[in-house]
Length: 109
Image 1 (spheres, one colour):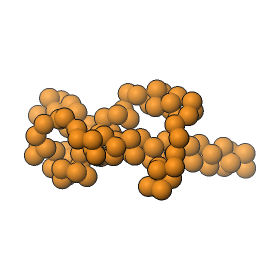
Image 2 (cartoon, one colour):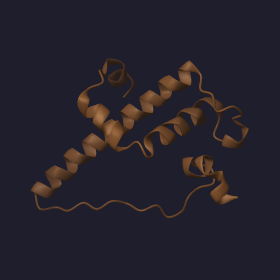
Image 3 (cartoon, helix red, strand yellow):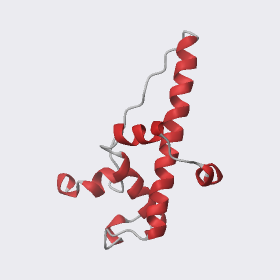
Image 4 (cartoon, rainbow, N blue to C red):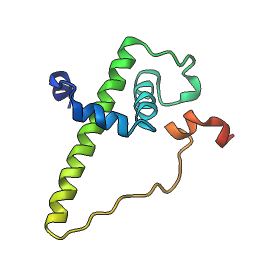
């Protein structure tokens, strides 16, 4: 995936994906990047200012989400064309060490 990201050139479809998913993608990818660079306990992260390397990781995780969504859409279309219906998943609970809690701590205190 890293090699594909290095060779990836942003395009209109990718930019549209980021726009359509703007309600969650930046927060999720930032959380992933910070978890990777600062450890998984977000209570110890300190400043929310990202380093250049962390910003690059945010972009990488956005690319990963785009790739996954694109591949899933292709798989779903193929399955539907064969008469197979795919349904989504539902979260069972929200982990305390998650983007949802980190972003909206006041809702979980």
